[in-house]
Image (cartoon, rainbow, N blue to C red; front, side):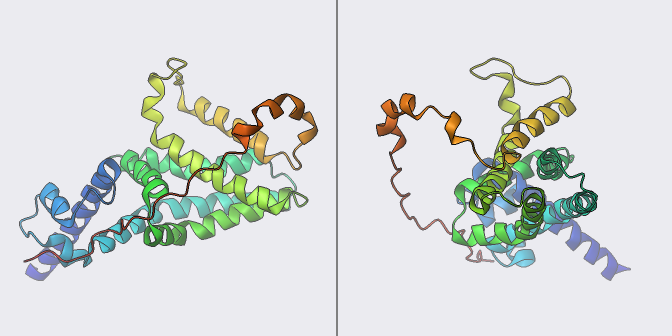
Length: 256
């Protein structure tokens, strides 16, 4: 009985540390949060609790990603399984693909206690991740994104593969970053652009995205190059490469 109680307490402490880490990483970024910060915010009696349960800062980040994957992956699998059947029946549409990308993250966003922070954390991963974090992020999303890519390839087999890969990845990035800033929609340069019903907002976004995904071959002939050539000096600009800084997460253990 005592051993079971101890095991239960350890599991509760581990889960609490993960939830605190999700919120702190989402609000402060990965480099701005230390293992000690997480311990303090979680109110653990053991000052080395994060090191005890996860080994390192990267260890708790991996645990966070595993928790999010446990929620996201079954939804992605359920949706893509259904769409593969739909594709076999010849009923698949670009709107289906757009919704398949959005729906799992919307469910995550609506999860009580940590969902909104989890989506913001995902957005931070895209913006702040070093090579190690990118590898971790890609590891969890590679298969779901690949299945979406394969579905779209079946829908539009003649589409330029590079264009398609760019569009699919951009759809994922836009969905995550857009959902993470949804709270800002009440005060934009165009005023309050929120919807009374979230379902309507989702459908408007889906049809917006689907118009791009559904274009099998861009009609560059409709683009007035004669007009836009006057801005060619802007269009040909290239951004400077981002400085390579050592922003790897602190993985050193804390002193006991």
